[in-house]
Length: 84
Image 1 (cartoon, rainbow, N blue to C red):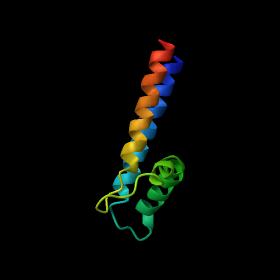
Image 2 (image 1 turned 180 degrees about the vertical axis):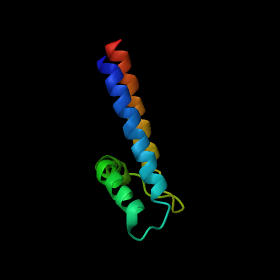
Image 3 (image 1 turned 90 degrees about the vertical axis):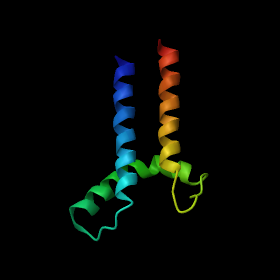
Image 4 (image 1 turned 120 degrees about the vertical axis):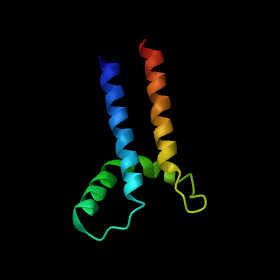
């Protein structure tokens, strides 16, 4: 039960990271999209920002969201092994 809830939270948070990364590709000047992007960044930036310190952009592409999701998946797999 606990593992299922943790899995769902990791899945939702991973999708929030993806959505924030995709919205960062678009130039928005105010409006609803900017509000959504701001909310997503408020939720995801504290975590993704940890990886941004160590992974510089390569060719203008920020790979820190990818690394952040990979670390979440590794933590999830470790939790599965510990609890099962």
